[in-house]
Image (cartoon, rainbow, N blue to C red; front, side, top):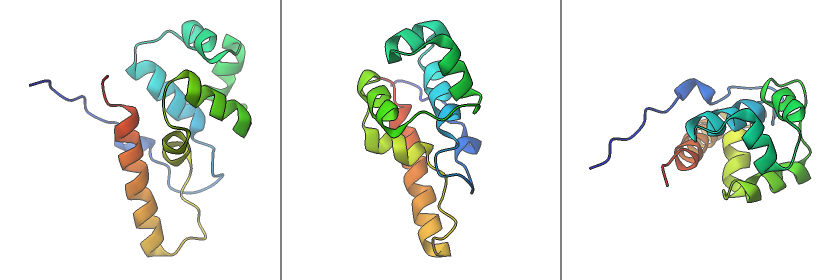
Length: 114
């Protein structure tokens, strides 16, 4: 039986700009897959400088770029968006819990070993 990797629970954001944690998520995926930043940038079709700025939350990629990233990483864009999106503050408390649970599940799916 294969041992599962421990997930990073604090990657799930709490509030704020909806896509502000996408850079952290992309970095988490890259590190989890043991891909150097330059190689990841080539895989995603962007410069290493741009990827670095995204990972450090200095730049936000467009939705079109994120869809392209998901395709190039062979992951569902929906799963990427759910895992990388902040919990919308306007949700009811019950819906925030549901959304947070969805994020945790999406993150687990993204980090499954192939």
